[in-house]
Amino acid sequence: MHIVISDDHQDCIRHLSCFEKLQGHTVEIFNNSVSGTDALAERYKNADAIVLIRERTVITRELLDRLPKLKVISQTGKMASHVDLQACKEKGIVVMDGRGSGAATAELNMLLILASLRKLVEEVARLKNGQWQGYLGDQLAGKVLGVYGFGRIGKQVCHLGKAFGAKPLVWGRQSSLQKAAEEGFAVASSKEDFFRTSDIVCLQLRLNDETRNIVRTQDLAMMKPTSLLVNASRAELIEPGALEAGLKQGRPAYAAIDTYESEPILGANHPLLHLPNCLCTPHIGFVERDNYEAYFGIAFDNINAYLAGSPQNCVN
Image 1 (tube, helix red, strand yellow):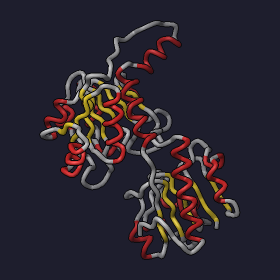
Image 2 (cartoon, helix red, strand yellow):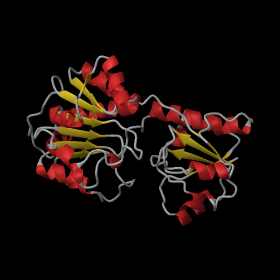
Image 3 (cartoon, helix red, strand yellow):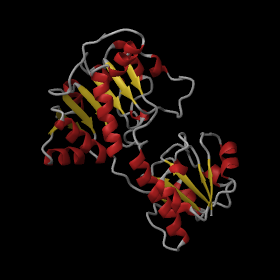
């Protein structure tokens, strides 16, 4: 098959051990991202199969109309709303996804929390600029670690936070609260109580119609003047403009962000990058070697299983 993989920003996929699974196929890899139907149709015009890296590329019905050769889409990780599954079904295109442990993203959440509390990046910059200590940091132990969502990653963040001596506090839908309570974690009495009580708010929600813009300006306004907000899930969970405005007003006092509305961010072209009280990373939550081996290993297995006549992990 002619397989096209786009958005390999680090040019790392060809160097993964699991890449050997594509021996015998023609594999075309692009290290940049493009947008718009014309550019995407040109990129995928020869593809029998497409491997998608998370939600970096949106597959619309209009695009599919211009890809008559396409037979298979293999998604790294769990499928989200970036692929028109109904259009794929109508066109006979098999869509398959995979799963990951979420450990890499959970670990990044802890890294962002600790780096923010201790002003790690700022202190490193001061030292490189010939200066010495500049900030009085804060420890995680004893802090109320608010985790919004108790799925695969949220659960891990709670356990990791507890290991550091934090006090996890969970909010989310009723099923999440029930699972958190069964695991022995405290749950907030309301959304308002969650934002008012938490020293740190860590968003761990999947993006869908229900959760889009679920964190609003009034929620941030209830946070403590010493609080930290961490978002390594999806930018669209927060109402547009609300976090920038909140940071300028001091609630939250600081934020650590790994996701953005439109990616990649190039030329420092995002307002949060220019705020002194925001630590920004380039969506690296899942970008880790073991995670990539697992994600892409399953994605490549899916293609080979399809060719063998035994499609697996089908979502449409």
